[in-house]
Image: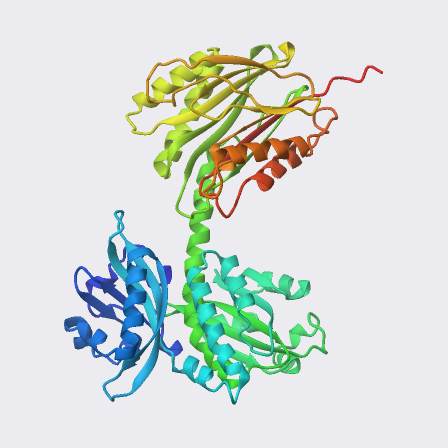
Length: 562
């Protein structure tokens, strides 16, 4: 609920007269904040109207709200509320509420439960709206077969928007909703205002010329989305001709014979219109009931999009911070080519401690490093940056692989942090057809030899860095001949919530064995495609909760003597 200013710690519940949700009354959606421990319920004016409460009742007698829920709805509502408070984060509830005029009205509430680090409920943040249009549509199913479907789609879309974390997910929810009954959503465009320009965030189904025009449009341009952001007014155009008549500049971008209806919804949160959504439907315009539903949902769409924008921007900043600490370029030699990949964890606020590095050593050797600092936060990333720099310095000074890793462990302990780190250091020596491996609590190397054999080498290892300062890890030498490929990775690539790490390691062996390794000279092989292939074919996006670092090295094949 980032659009409500709650997750950022704005203290919404501290003032009874606070604008709780920042959702304008125009769209009929009101904001509510409930703090169970304090027995405090705060509602904005729209929420008070939806709930049929006065400001005094809300602040001094919040328990009166529960007393007005219809008795037949209480068991279901109580069971659902208990389940949400015990285990869930997001919720979406329908119930009947008796108003002071004795009118029982269907009401819809949705929102999020915010907890402390121990899982205790701090506050419940949500929005409420009059759900009678939903129920009336459902009850009129016999006269209008699309009515019940509208109500179902509203509930499905509301649930999907509550769960959507990114702008792409918000867009997909709108496409999949099928809000238009017999007609279907053909195209969706989602945009926001950006310093006088219209920033296209996502689109589906619109022709390429329209997408290009949207990307280059300004707020003052006479275009539907620009106008909606500028004025804050929705627009419904019953057919293609109406669109072209109102916006003649679109004639050169859209075919003239399409049977399409259009809806343009301004997105308003905290009293400010910051974006707009454009919908195109097959089969003509939008009937009055659908227009009402879309207008009511525009507040929910606005909040979902605002939350998604915050998520995307936070994720981008986290990934940028992490990436800035990794090497900008990898050293390449006439006999050795390298490729690396980094993928952040799938959570916006998390910055990981995974890293990789490579640097040339004397005698034509190359050192490869892969590691992971404990934790997923800015502290882990900072420790990672310091540790990577220290290990790089020890290797550049000419210390052996064992000594360099031992000094790095002592350095980590002396930082005074409570973090430990795992690490594998591989020194590749093409002149000796071998690699020296030193491992500190990390995965060992996976090697594919020129003849196609693939195996994880069971190299000896020591404890993670920082646990026993000064301890030297054992060193193991393994073959690394001409045409061989070595893969070093963090456990995020092969471990997930849905599979055991051994399953992931076995899968990586199979993928490497069949992957596009390449057999030509260095620089002409398929190492970059191989790195992409390993990352996409093995990592499980649904079950992965960790960031991933991957480093791949391939030695040039032996020259053809025939």
